[in-house]
Structure formats: structure tokens, C-alpha cells
Image (cartoon, rainbow, N blue to C red; front, side, top):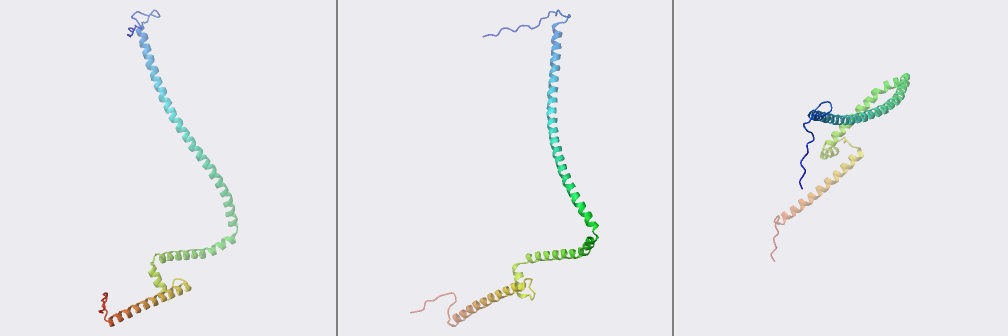
Length: 194
């Protein structure tokens, strides 16, 4: 199948209306088409920019809503705290006796805080010392850093353990002396002649 030859759309004949030629019409058509294409590209660019700006605007709107809600909540909390605290402070300040009591008790409370800190830090020092050093202090020191009952119990356990060790050592020494007296060879067993 063959295609028919393309037909000429325009001819070189002058146009009857207004004395213009078809070539001028084609140029005007091409200029109008290119202008409409440029306008279409500009519209698409503007649409893309508007879409981005609209999404940014929505994000900013959401952030502002969150901030506004947070401010309302904080304002309510602060107003409640302000009403409760200020009235409590003014009531306490009007009572001079309470201020005098605080002035008298404050040094005592400060001393208690320092004592608590000293005990806290000294207990950390005790916990950082090895167990053998703590036991040695409890057993041999006259003033143990534990209660009297615990010191007595630990000292009694130490005494019993020491007695058991001495008893086992004496049995070992007696066996060694007996073996030496009977002229037995250490570490070797010899068969007795029959």
C-alpha cells in the first residue's frame, strides 16, 4: 500500500482578504503557537511553584497550630501555678513567725545535709575497699565500722576457722613426724618383702 502524496496546504496565491499572503498567516500562526507554548511552560512552572509554596504553607500552618496549642496549655498551667503560688507566698510572707522559724532552722538543716553528704561519701569509700581489708578491719580493729553484734559474729567465725586450720595443720605435722620416725619414703610406696 502506498500513501498518497502530500498535498500542498497553501499555495503561493495571495489571500483575498485584506491583501495578505498565506506566508504571513503561517508566520503569525507560528509566532502565536510559540507564544502559547511559552505561556504554557510559564503556567506549568507557576503551578509547580504554587504547589511547593502551598505545601510549605500547610507545614507552616501546622507548626503554628502546634505552637499555639502549646502556648495555650502552658498559659493555663502558668496561670494556675501563678494563682496558687503567689497566694501561698504572700500568705507565708505575711506570717513573720514562719520566717523567724525558717531563719532558726536553716543552719540546722544545712548541717544535717552536710552530715548526710559525709556519710554518703564515706560509705562509697567503704564500698570501694576490698572485702579482705574490710574483714581485717572488723576482726582486728578495736572499733569496727559495723554493729557490735555483727563484729562479734564475724570475730567468732574467724576464731572457729583459725582453730580448724590449726587443728588440720597439727594433724598434718603429726603424720609427717610419724612417717619420718618409721623411715617411710615420702611420695613413694615400697612393697614390703614377704
